[in-house]
Image (tube, rainbow, N blue to C red; front, side, top):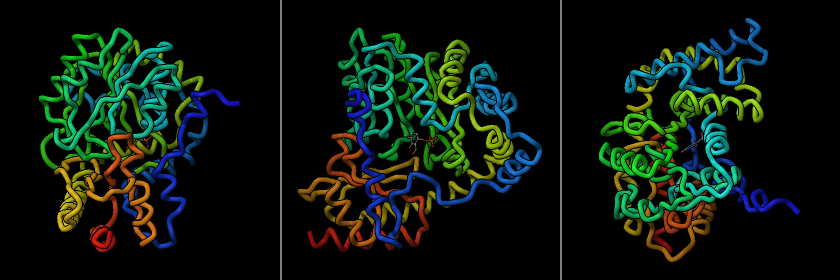
Length: 374
Ligand SMILES: Cc1ncc(COP(=O)(O)O)c(C=O)c1O
């Protein structure tokens, strides 16, 4: 009755957990910071409404914000201008229009397994075929370059990468970013790089793929870095030619990104560094609490995490991740079943530490007591 590309879409396993959650449950399933955006940003948003910024804006976003984003990107690429940037309705829409823009019917796109849930559907909705590459604990959840090479065919158009990563919390070191970039160059592939957690790096450094490969399409967002998931503002940064095509697709998808929120984000960007310094300090402590508590659970193995705000332990219980997550939910703690991030996520749970240290500790104590009885 409905086309396969639509009927095959699944309801996210994470959403299912939220819907089944008892009142007062401790939420370690959150994919968003539990804090307010900077005050300056909220004030600027309200002022924008009062000043009459309530109309359609340009399809590619307001010029001031495109300029400000480009200015930020010039920290690592001197040749970036507003023409390389399109403002989007978050990374979700950014990734979607990027796939629409570059894919021909039947093109293959390499996507991570486990990986964030939108990549496969985005590729399919754009007429492409998602082909999975593995991220395994024994390889610190980093892509295996040889495996990726073996998956490339004449139909391959792009590789989707995500560092810092959801759900694994891995940050790709410079060598991995360089090696993947070289591979993409050799095979004339785009790199579609989801960098929404670029400001959440606790050790080491975030290496954008745009530093090493010209045909990179960076998808980013202010959802996480300015704690504004509900504002729906993000951006795509890439070549001028691709931005021009993206603007057309965006026009037919969205007309334009919301105008008043763009004025808010413009002010938010001015205080981003100060805001993030404070957030990072707190989130690093939360990460440490989560890792310490997880280490007390003998049936869980957790690889070190140095980015985003997730830990992704592997468990030694003979049970699908959804069943285990539901048992944990029954005791009042929300987490995400690893299987919702792909087949290789099975046997894992994803805990978010975007919650207070007290709740992380309490929640994981409940998990510890529950799994001890399994
Ligand atoms: C890896 C990753 N990419 C993209 C998104 C979507 O972000 P946005 O709110 O900008 O659409 C998320 C949200 O959780 C995410 O984790």
